[in-house]
Length: 243
Image (cartoon, rainbow, N blue to C red; front, side, top):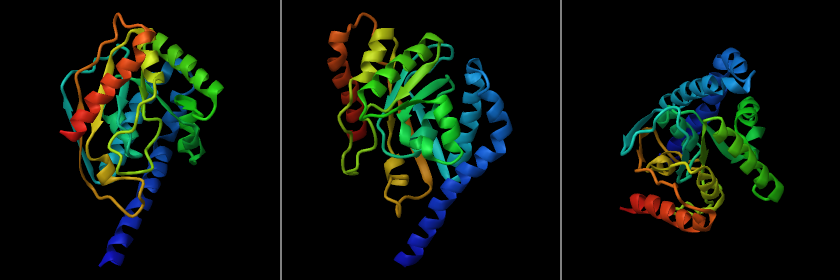
């Protein structure tokens, strides 16, 4: 019985990567057009949202989002959440109509075809390189100055130990939010780890619940407050995950 279960999971997991590749190929002509100019990024973002929905529903996931506060278009935010799965990316795209740019690890740029668009539309970071982290901060500032939002997973990656509910947050995201005096949107993904973790022979289709929590304001804060802001936002997400 376990052999049959693992075989089905293997097929399902392979289908995930195949679905990513095929969906990008189908959207390829318009995706290529959408990255020709930086000012066309909102168009690319709309296509990325379509792609995310194809992946989520194509994998048998049913995303349900609870909004405690509305995300408005044409306003800059910093989106942060717990990071537990590759489908966090798709869920984040699904829940926000407001165009944002991901800050993500450079290793994802190695994925065939997906990486081509990833490195041209996201802000890539080498977390072991200090100059790379500084460059990320500058690039994020440029995007915010153009009216876009930024999405950062402040844990700095998915914890290798899956028993960790929420790892410590890094300060960079909160420094950025304070510098631009923009609201922080705490987001919680409840089911992504259970339904599609990094353990290969695990997971299953089903409901993916997420909640957009009340925004955390940064008006009037200075960089001296970034650590307290970090702790506050992490506590909000952790409390929701463990309640």
